[in-house]
Image (cartoon, rainbow, N blue to C red):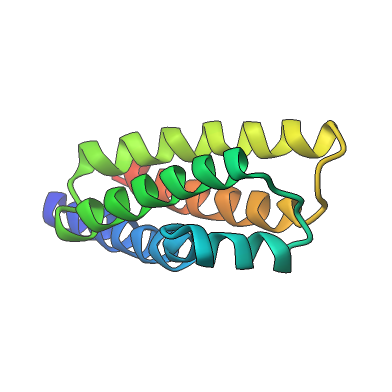
Length: 122
């Protein structure tokens, strides 16, 4: 049973990592990041583009680490991070930011719940 639980956590962890990679890869360069922000209708400056590029790079690197080593401790940390991301997406929506964030919030909640369920499964 322990092996099955470990496999289940690894499977959901790798799936979440794949989602993060796909969702964030466009933010790794300033050129593609600006294009995505334009498509989302999000105004941006050089400073916001810098931070979105740095953020995209970190998320892509983190997703690769979780894909290569889907260990319970890493998936647990990622699940906690998803809870915090969800909180900040909800806060931004409450503050009147782009409604496009609602889609990202829904996806973070889905992946966080899926990973948490796998982690709690016995």
